Length: 299
Image (tube, rainbow, N blue to C red; front, side, top):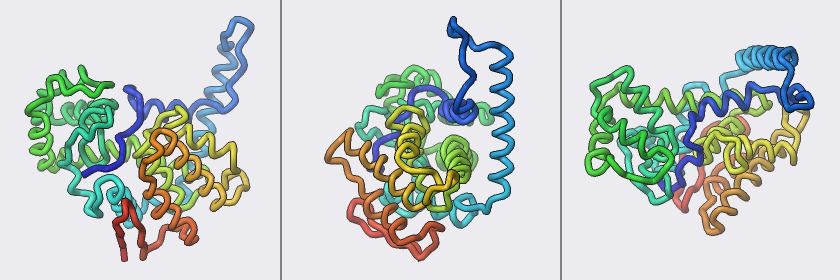
């Protein structure tokens, strides 16, 4: 059973949100007196953003695989699954579907896509484009209708059974993996590498995107990163990696507690923070951690 809250993202395409956030200059060209940015300045800002993106891409390509290495990526899914589904067998979540009462409708699939937060709709739309006769296609009108709400209108009583059945299809499992990587894993790893973080830091970014969503508001990933950057220097800016990650976890934990003072934060306290304080910045096994009082080990 999934125990964490669903992804806290707005009902907009999350990849577009992240892409825009990373593509715009940190100090955009000033507008004129009427609030308009001159075309020449905007063109220059866009060119600067593209050039920076090219440099970043080259930097990331030149770095070691980190969390994107096959063995580390598998490890990452196990650690996330321990907090999301209380298991190391993350593949069993392909067929998972349940309303956990968090106001986001149905939570489903390998990374907790939600009917109320647009990512589940995006997944089914993309899958249906490639496989128009799939068993979930008939629910697309209802998924569009309930997007952004916790409603089950048009989904009950057959949607959950249809999801579980479709999850037996290898193409749908592959689609879940692809959407997870496109929206959460790849952007998290790429940005963490740009920030000068090793494998553990890349995982912390990924887990934060999974739980908090890749939005820019103060409770979502980019908002949390912005606050951490104000309190500690990034390693890419000469800061100490352990100090920055400790600050990042402090910021994330505070946000979790501010929403619900009684919320369980063991995925930080006795898992991620434990790896950090052990000095395991490369996230090298063997690993032992606790989530919700349960102990997990990877030899």
